[in-house]
Picture (cartoon, helix red, strand yellow):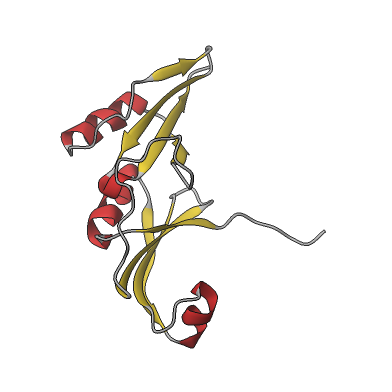
Amino acid sequence: MSRLRFDHVGITVANLDTVTAFFVGLGFEVEGRMALEGEFVDTVIGIPNSRSEIVTLRPPVGGTGLELSSFTRPNHEPGSPNAMSTELGLRNVMFEVDDLDGILDRLAGDGYGLVGGIGQYEKMWRMAYVRGPEGIIVALAQRID
């Protein structure tokens, strides 16, 4: 079997700075920022004459990262900023955290609210969905066992 390693999740956004600041506030670190254009990227994504700016982020402990992309060519297409879990497509990114209540309080102070409520699964997890910038749903889970 060939090697397979989960490297990152890509999210296309309109406001790269706002979304980057949101994830940095969750604890991610900026790994790099650059513009992408040319034959290579046009071939890979199947969009001729494209240009985007990307920010790559990683958790400080390593592991799977995030790639945030904002297109300047062609113009980005709006998504459904209030999408719920039943809509097809990537609906959330999930992170395990140590202080769920503290993070939720800080995010609420920044204007980001819960999608539903804080749930508890048996005596193992507390979890909540937060709607971040541009409608991105971030699942946060704290182990309590």
